[in-house]
Image (cartoon, one colour):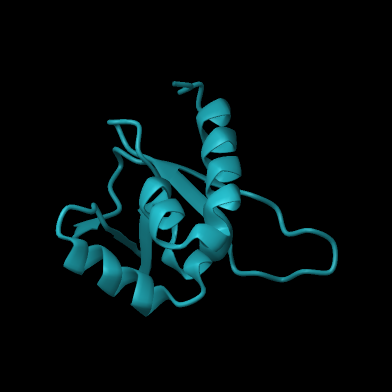
Length: 101
């Protein structure tokens, strides 16, 4: 499992009016290879998503401020109910950092 490094580019979206979600839940990052990571909590259960990723065997994991971040491709594949949101976040992160594929 990797930890957050200066190689990662991070962004945080604003809370919508009336919401008070912590910044780590609203954060995403992109690594030098172009993989976009989001909070594992997006899957509904951070620990469950983490265990799925580690047992999968070939999924990069980032630990930042005691929270797990997983690749959007993994969450979209393993947790289809968040697949559309994963694609949206990935698109916005790539656009923000000019890393379109």
